[in-house]
Length: 353
Ligand SMILES: Cc1ncc(C[n+]2csc(CCOP(=O)(O)OP(=O)(O)O)c2C)c(N)n1
Image (cartoon, rainbow, N blue to C red; front, top):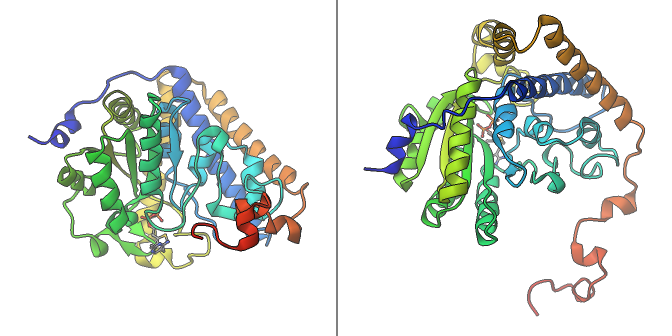
């Protein structure tokens, strides 16, 4: 029997501490309030290019990160603002990066897809669909080679699952026994194309893992306790058995593909978004659950939101105290050899003589 078919029933069952639960709520508010503020800066003309929002999907980034340990690594696809915030990048360095200013985490030279924080083991967003998947496997390979008992976590949308490189990666991850956890944030749409129009798949696309004899599992973004259990199980499997996992989490983005996707209420109905937002918003449900469980009073829950809002406002103020990069600064950090004035940069041959 395939190991994969067993995984749905076996989770760690480790209960979350009240501190972890509150931390997840705080992270979700921080993501939502940051992104709402970023949209305003975008509308004011203070940002350009891409801005992909996670609003609606926050429970995944917040909960997965809460289950990770300090030696674990993470990497994202294009929709990676929430992962960056959850990884601990200061809001102001993300806001500055989106505004193209030098205090940004990539010195204002990359924008939305350059939210890197190597000091926090977070290896950024990757704009090319599924490009992050072999890199995640590479991170896992390095951890294993160095005998570090840690895992690599790869976030991706379901739209990246039909890329050839993803299947090559699954094959190698399973063949080489790599400690990697692929998190599929399935929001049902790749840009404006629904999953039904792009995938000839079983109902759960994570089931494709069976073809690679890989464990897989599924849950929804509203059940944060279950996400935590399943991610913890997958991370334990990676750290202790060097086995990869494909975990699909159903979710919904409330905004379009990116902020300028004005047609997103044409390829799905406004009612479907309102229904989720009004009745099944993971942030609202989690906040209510923590109040019901007695971990928080309503006033404390409101304070967490207010602090997140203030931090988001302040991040814009702080970001704008730094200038945009100068032309010489833009030319730095492109080629290591050029910055180091290495012989390779003089002869123009970097790889072959
Ligand atoms: C190889 C490649 N083809 C096409 C694109 C254009 N593109 C950018 S994001 C995207 C779809 C992303 O959908 P999904 O992976 O489900 O993530 P989501 O936006 O839903 O979070 C596409 C097709 C791309 N970036 N790379």
